[in-house]
Image (cartoon, rainbow, N blue to C red; front, side, top):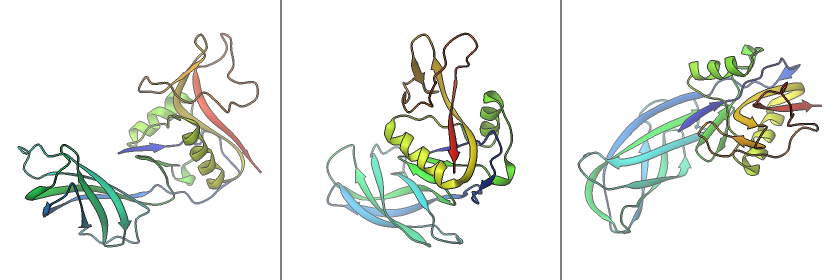
Amino acid sequence: MKCIWFLLVVEVMSVVDSHRPLTNGGSFELALFSSKAKTQAEIVYRMCLPKVPDFVHATARPSNPSLSYKFNVTILEIMRGSFLVEIERVDQATGWDTMLITVDWSSYIGNVVVYQNLILWFPDAADRRILNAYTASQYCNDNGGQLVDIVDKAMYDVVYDYCQQTIEFGWARIWLGSSYNQTTDTVTQRNGKLGYHGDWYPGFPGRGSGNQTYTGLLLYIK
């Protein structure tokens, strides 16, 4: 699970409370068998949480590392003291005899948005700062996150809507992790794959030697 931070690089007039998410995690071991490839189980946090988590991510593995079973985990319901999952065997379309299975999980409480397996949020609104592209990236890395890459139109809409809902009004420039190549007219993510190349602000992307190759999101919230 990657934790990705947006970064406001110019001060906005007012920002909704957007503190860093409260993150917890742990492992839960249970003896489980199934006559089919899928079964359900309740996973207990075994810790006191202040409220029902806004998001939970989990993976499952045999507790015995010599076993080659592979599982996918789907979160069915999130509760305050536990969460319900569907565990599916994916190395074979069959069930399994009783074995110890370890479920590793992470929970998040706070003003976040989830896109696929990414958790996206703004840093604490009280910690706004003016940064260039390099220092913005370094700031995120130092705090366990990274600037967001926008993969496609669907993700762009999620990111843009989240920004509009979080920022009350004013100008906001938000650094992104992708780069723009003027020669090939392409946007590239940090992992080397192509990123989203659409919904540009009028007059952008800029061309010529005076233009930078970093990317960002520019909003004016009325």
